[in-house]
Image (tube, rainbow, N blue to C red):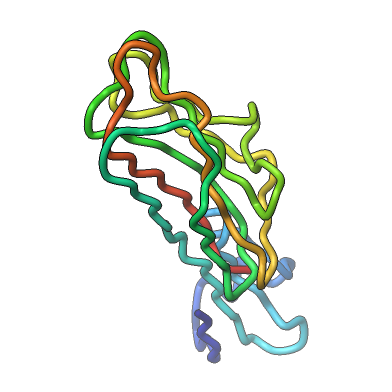
Length: 158
């Protein structure tokens, strides 16, 4: 999204005469001068979520469903949730871009008896147009497998 237009009699214009770029909000929102006229452009990258879900008992194995990205994007976070908690040990999942994990520790875990993982900041943060994501189930819980997975990947388009 972008908006361009003159700012007349604006206190912002007076404050920003020495700046070409001022960050005004979230990391992806900027106020930019074109350097020659009092025209400003606000650029905001909207963060979005893609959700992978799988009903039923978790079973260890490589993912078979590929989600292709029709645009370049930047990853911000990953979180997993199970409708029924694993028992005996954690259930762990890997998120792959093509054939390489994007996760910092190689997997994200929903702990023994828990329903939701901690938020993970990906180590691989970009994906190109035409690349895909694939989810692997690494462990499921040693006594009782977790059930009903929802895995969320937060991203913004670039």
